[in-house]
Length: 217
Image 1: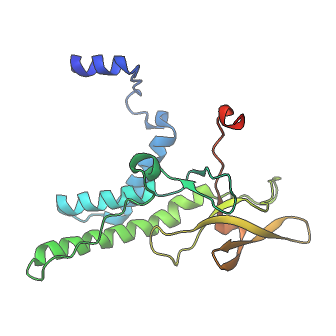
Image 2 (image 1 turned 135 degrees about the vertical axis):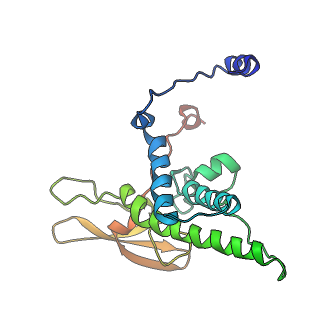
Image 3 (image 1 turned 135 degrees about the horizontal axis):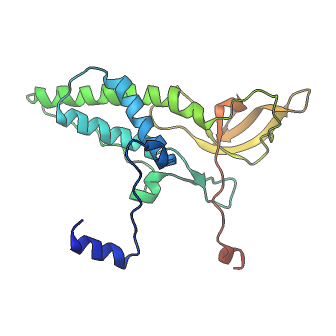
């Protein structure tokens, strides 16, 4: 490490803790994200050989997809769930998708590469939906007691019919308990429409813990 960089890091009280070789599991949650990207890209690209330009474009699209998933919500108004995403923290906005580029008719090579990168990005999104999102949903059988979803819970609504990544975040407006008292179906209101869905189609978003100083104001 360069002395200048080391001195600057020391001023910021930044310390590096390196994992031992051949131990990616030491990374915990962030290594799980790396695995998600690797697995989906391996499935998406397979044995394809793509240009560096296409690969860079796909990786930026993949980054936008992964960083657009909600982490939690911070709004105190249940009617206005404002989810926090990695994009919100990194870029100040929830969406980091690339703008649509219009190439001239004569630039056939760039148009072909752009279409190729979009096809690969869409392929990645499909695998992201089917492989990664199920890990966010509690799908255990009812042999273990779990807390029922309740009115006002902020949820991410799983909807594979929507284009990537435009899933809605809203609150549960009512619940429909089964005869045994368990809630397997709930209703959410999105703008002027209500949707009845099984709770397996919802991903609960936790509220960020409040600063003790905020509660005193």
